[in-house]
Length: 358
Image (tube, rainbow, N blue to C red; front, side, top):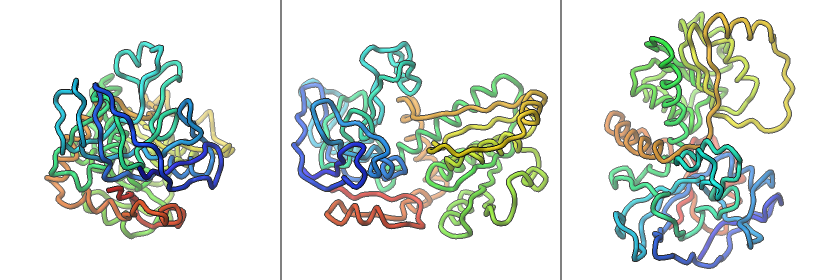
């Protein structure tokens, strides 16, 4: 079958090639891949920054944001049928396992021995077929199949918002206002989810008005280009900020967010920042403000099965309330052919790139 693979840690090694078809066991499901979303992680793996091949192989099939249809079910599998639309989870619990992995919270793995399809130790989904255990698969309604490839990034947002409300159960809390830093896929999905909760959302993004601002405004949010205002000035312009979700991976903004958040507010960091960028901060001021304002800052990564189920339900809700919005977030569709890698290497002003596999 056709797949996109890399030789891990070798920049420029990405290639479209033939790999063996997966062998489905009696307790597994064979899935034909329809679409795979591309994100910054995939570009970093293609650039040789990280990635680990499965044991016994010298290559890694990339891709972790998947949408497919059941091709065949093993003899011991129930609750799945050919034709079902499927999104697969990314992380797999470690073999030890730690107490969190044993509780189906492998996103909270303690010893770091987890595997991740398309990233670390397991082949990904940017191939024509894959086989998987049912417990790592989520069925999605056919009505959202045109954009259900967004479910995996949606789970990052689901976990973030879920934990914000759990943490804030520490006090009587009626949030009114949120700033989302960044208007990429994660940021826009975060804004849509917060709007479902009735929160006034303000996007702060470096891009000027365009596709991203159009989606933001369709969500019912306010879009503020960074060229028009400093982040530090926003509280004076919009009022007390209850929530900040950082979705850029630009670490200086994370520290600025700690100064922007208001009384009893919370900052969630979702962006992964690479490199070793230095930053001078007013440490005493930040420390004093966080203590006297009862602020919280936390980070979140990946998601567990609960968040996949929540994400599927909320994608249906968002589509019902804002018809067509989620489909508009997929701005680039690229076929799986020999020109794929060249297309991925070219810059894009869009939001989400998706590879059409079959």
